[in-house]
Length: 100
Image (tube, rainbow, N blue to C red; front, top):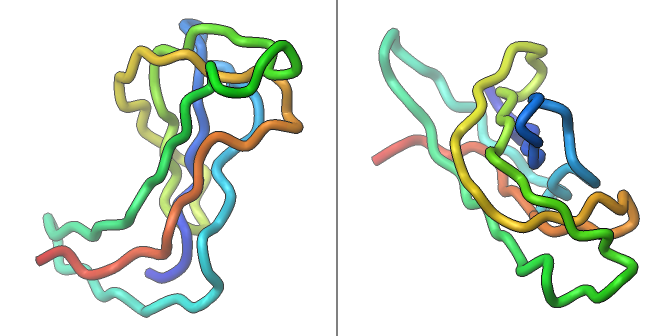
């Protein structure tokens, strides 16, 4: 697999909150995975409370993560303030890399 995972904040009902993570960079590396193996990436988050009223602050309960090119996902628990305004991007995600 190669490319960028999809990452977004979700509410208690599992609905996406605001904008998904932007991609950080453009180059990707093909990562071959054996059964049970994993990859890694870098996710950077900014503080939603820094954006003022245009943020439309709401509580997030997790991060939804999609593998590149897939439609199935996992929700990782994370209670954090998020911006419901789609114009405010709070995260950037890098390409997949082989896990060390």
